[in-house]
Length: 285
Image (cartoon, rainbow, N blue to C red):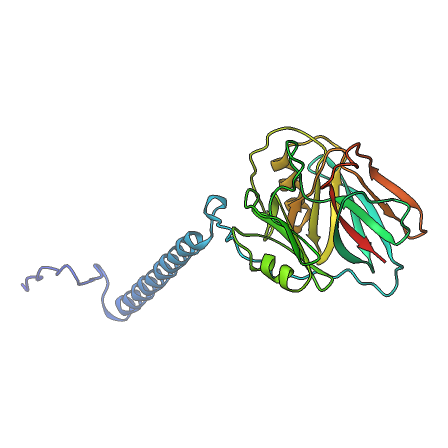
């Protein structure tokens, strides 16, 4: 009687089969084993790459917005429209917004009283804040190449050079010097949106807000008819699709525009028009 030798750990033996039938069973077993190994390998590969891919997706807390000079210059020209402001209303996050887009007009800054009777003005709205104690402009400000004030209390900025506008956020922007050298304009304000990400600011009062924005490649002024927090307004602008934005003087700040029919339409009416350093961003025909 022949003794069956022990089965090694790495050996497979089919019990109870012999001859042709046993051979078929052994082949079927090997095929099943091979398929199992392939399936297991694919599962491991997918798990590895899925985990790796998830690790590469930045979470909101990991998003870092670098403070860089603006790289998008905006120029609202449209051959179909006259020199006018187009207005549309929308509702985002439960906040009522008014979007004012000036077309075929040259932007500039203005300091001092400004008359709404000037028919060349397509849109005008107050720009930089000024101090209540001495009336001076808050933050860096350049008027037609002449620096009127300095300061970095607000990181957002608007630069106007050669009739084009860019918005951004930076501690020190070379556009201040460029505006000075090339007869341009520059002012600082609180940043609202940078590269599509809403910025946080400390003021915690609720008020009517207004911001200068890059929306769909066009420069526009967006205001709200609801009293909201600054940070909530910035989130709303980001959800609307604004790429970059800086705050303007809000609340009941002075401002007006002319529609496509040439009609004068007030945005708000401030009682501070006689302030020495009241200033506006103005779009002229």
